[in-house]
Each structure stands twice: as structure tokens, then as C-alpha cells.
Amino acid sequence: MKHLGTQMMATERLTLRRFTPEDAEHMFFNWSCDPEVTKFLTWEPQESVESTASFLEQWEKEYEDSTVYRWAIELNDTEQPIGVIEVCSLDERIGSAEVSFRIGKEYWHRGYTSEALAEIIRFLMGEVGAGRVWAKTDTANVHAGEVMEKCGMLPEGVLKRAGWNNTGIVDLAVYGKAISAAAAEDAQTEDTEMTTHVTKVMGEDGKLRNVISDETMEYVGILAKLELSPEEAEAAKKDMADMLDYIDQLNELDTDGIEPMSHIFPVHNVFREDVVMNGDGSEATLANAPVLKDGGFKVPKTIGE
Image (cartoon, rainbow, N blue to C red; front, side, top):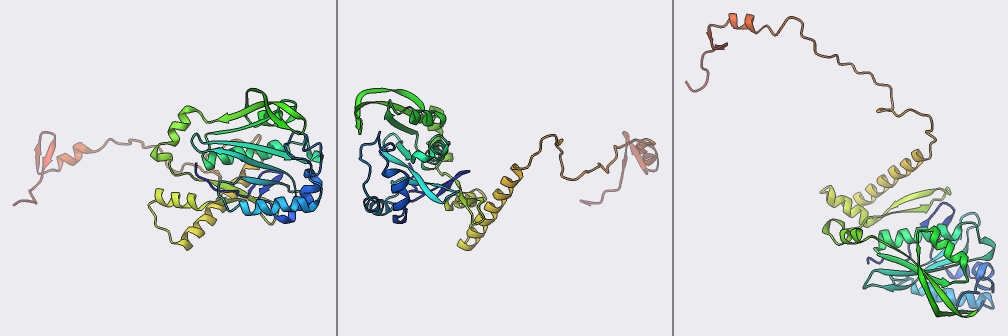
């Protein structure tokens, strides 16, 4: 796997970003103090904003490790974190990432968790290179299973009395999503050794913007056989991002009922078909030749005399 650390990403309604100590109050009141949210977790509800702040100070230090993936789920409408989604274990040998998530009770059943999880699965499998993303949950936590199935994670079985949480000893349901064997083989080839990615982030105007990675720009330079200076690479990244932003705008247009055209303007062919009017005139041409021979004419030699 190619570890990239906790990258900022955006979806239609959410921003996925790193936690900061300033998130302590929102995290505490939105979910970490709530016994209903922590019911299926292994830690008790936190008792104060200060205890939550201590967690966040430690998390902030852990972001220095590129194998740490832990995102605040920030709701764009309120610009405050409403939950957390993270990778809780990695197995480098098989390219496996285990994920977990929790979200404030006020935001349940609105599709926020599945929206965040789908983006994290895309990131882990498409950019980090994980071959398998999986999770486990108390079988009594049926809504968590529904979220995972909505994101394409399939139920793989139940581990009897295999876990413990605030309700006691529990059975664990396992869900997973993995790339196909063919895709895994392709990922090992030289052609797919270099990965590229484009991330969407929220701009100051509240709209999603495309951001081209340095790796993508380097790959484009290799394909085009160009040696770009740092300044040229930055300019090219901006141009590419602007083009993708424009394409996104075009994709938002309602084209129902509009007939496809090959050109954006009405164009008429100004060329006519070739029409033979009086033959090719070859007989008249040959008649004027000084010497006729085998249906052709002989001219004086001009080279090699």
C-alpha cells in the first residue's frame, strides 16, 4: 500500500478532515458524551470537554504518522464535526484496512455515515491501494450493518462471542469489500505501478473544487515526455483542475430532450462530391505527345545524361 495519511476530502454534504483540539466541544456534545452513541463501543461516554480535548491532543500528534487515517465528519451546513470515521487496523501483508465509525444521534438516519464511508472506501482502495476494506460490529447494531451494505460491503459471517463492548460479551458480524483477483493482478503490473488521484475540496465559495496531486502531475509529465519546472508543474496543475471544474459544471446541465450534435455550432459541409464531367482527357493529352508508346508517352531524359 502507498500510505498518504489523513487527507482532506469532500462529498456533497460533508468535509472529511483532520481533528484539531478546537473540535473538543463539538465532539463532546455531539457524540462522545452520549451513552446511546457509545453503547456498542469499548469505551465509556466521556465526562467533560477537557477529557475530550486530551483525546484530540493525542490524535493531533498521531497525524504525523502517514499510516494513521482518522477523519472528522464535518457537516458543511454547520461547519462542525458530527462524527468520526477511521482505520482502526492495517495488515500490510494482504493490503487490508479495517474501518470503524460513529456519529452523533441527532444525525442518525440521514445518510451522512454512508456518504462518508463510501468516500473513505474509495480513497483507501483507489489511492492508498488497499485490496480489502472491512469492518466488524455487534450483531445487535443492525443500523451499522445497513450502512456498510449500502456502501457495497458484503456480510461475511458472524463470529460467536468474539467481542466485548459496553453491553457485555457479543457476537460480531463481519462485513467486507475486496478488489477482484483480476484487478489485484493488474495492480502488480508495471503499467499500474504509479497511481494518480484527484481530490475534491470545498472552496471559499462553498463549491467543490478539484485538486490535482503532485503524483498525478508527475505521471502526466512522464506520459507526455515533458520535464516541468516546479513553477510549470504548479501552473499545469491549476489548469488541469480548472478544466475538471468546468467539466463538472457541464455535467450539472440538464440535457434531457436535447439532440446530440457533433459540433457545438451548426456546421454545413461546404465541399461537394467529385463529379466527372468530360472524362479525364487522357487521349487528347497523349495525342500531343512527341512519341506514343504502349498507351503512354515518352519524354526526353532529364536525369543521368
